[in-house]
Image (cartoon, rainbow, N blue to C red; front, side, top):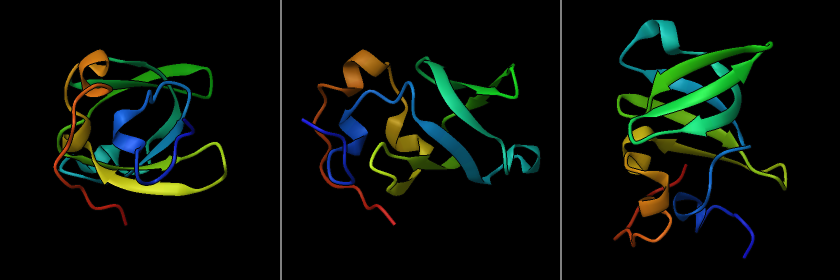
Length: 96
């Protein structure tokens, strides 16, 4: 199954390009890079040869999908262990 806007939250996010578009911490806005690791509460982004960690909760991310589509989601929707999130069913989420 390919990743798209409808099934985005239930997919593996490592390897996708992400940008923080809204955050409770102003210093995080504009932070971008390829996701190289994911834990329960953090994304590790590789940007310019450096690793930067940012919290999922409190941030809104724009993800670039492989088909050049973009999806914007609240990081709170992806809080949780990646292996659990992939199998979890979500009631409803809105993509912008």
